[in-house]
Image 1 (cartoon, rainbow, N blue to C red):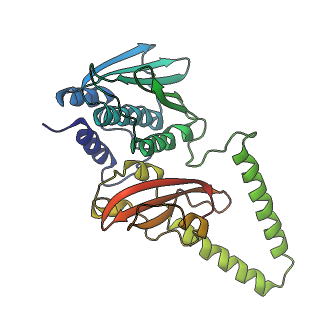
Image 2 (cartoon, rainbow, N blue to C red):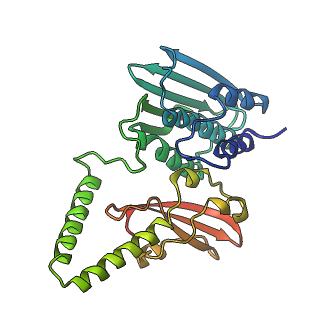
Length: 294
């Protein structure tokens, strides 16, 4: 009998399919079907829909995010608390959808913290926050609880929503854009030949950045222990070429070789850098280096 962790991973691969936008495509399996498969694998799951019925116009982005929250939580429960009972609550109310997944250590058992699951939680934030939602994952009593709250209709469907105006990220974004405007203004007062050269260089830089982007959804789907050939088709054409020495020198497992990718191709924003480290061809760590130009 296959484990719920392998079942959930297979469901993620089925949903990606061979075409279309992986981040926005609607799920091909419902949460109810996912829970049924978990039960078939031996996991005790109590699923309840509370509040008003699911709105008929629920955004596919939100629907997929709800599915992935439940999927990742079931995987973590099976991995870190075998035998634990899992409770899933989905509430649609006042234009928002709230997903709460809790699990507790089984009787006479021990609940292990979600070690590598922390990266899975980072992947969930890549799903939840871009649509205007919030994610909280923390120990609760003798167990663990994941709570995601999402708007039924995303405020921003782009891959890189604007951060709150009072955040440090917003201040960095404004400063970066101001510097870019100053550089562009200076370019217009230099001789035409230099301006053409600058434009060509910018176009080349944009091309380089666009071809080293690993989609957040694909990063979230990577699993420690996979062989590189299993997910090589989801990796970008090239690695991020402008990784700073401070990022390259970050601690990593002894004997591993690491690759670096950007989480989006924006020229103006400071974006997350993804680091994948391999022992031979096996993925041993996946890290998010937040808010850096490399």
